[in-house]
Image (cartoon, rainbow, N blue to C red; front, side, top):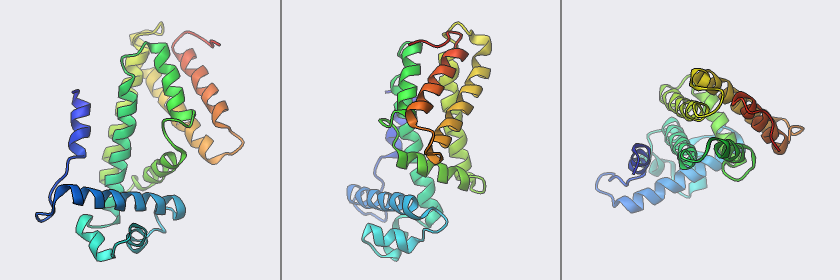
Length: 212
């Protein structure tokens, strides 16, 4: 098990709440997080209340507070969970050949298979809130640095060379976030088109150029 896998596993281990059986507590937390996700996608973070989340989860607001001290705490927990899943998916193909990694990254973010539209929407909500939330900002920084480190490792194996790897990783990540955000908000920009643009620029940065 890698260090990342150990961290991911630790983040999902059950913990007792005043002696409550862990598995039952985990199921209720999962229900709350699922309800929170649905509320955010439906109403946005600012307009979602704890009462909304509790109602969607089928529990009382006071019962919800037994598991999470407030709305910010739920958001922070959910963001960390989604970020870990995204990092895990990227880590899964870290040992592939560089060109295959480019294809898999393109599919992960733009083929609608790996990361869903609702996950993207939720992450964008979190990015906005992270401006004033220290915990979210810390977790976002962790996600950003992980993604850029994987991109740098990828570029370091290609003709562009290790000297340009970190600079290329910064550019590639900016293109990735920019295109994925644009594709979320602009219906004229189809995911397939965004995928083609991302793949093309990744190949250009890699010093390979467009390939069919």
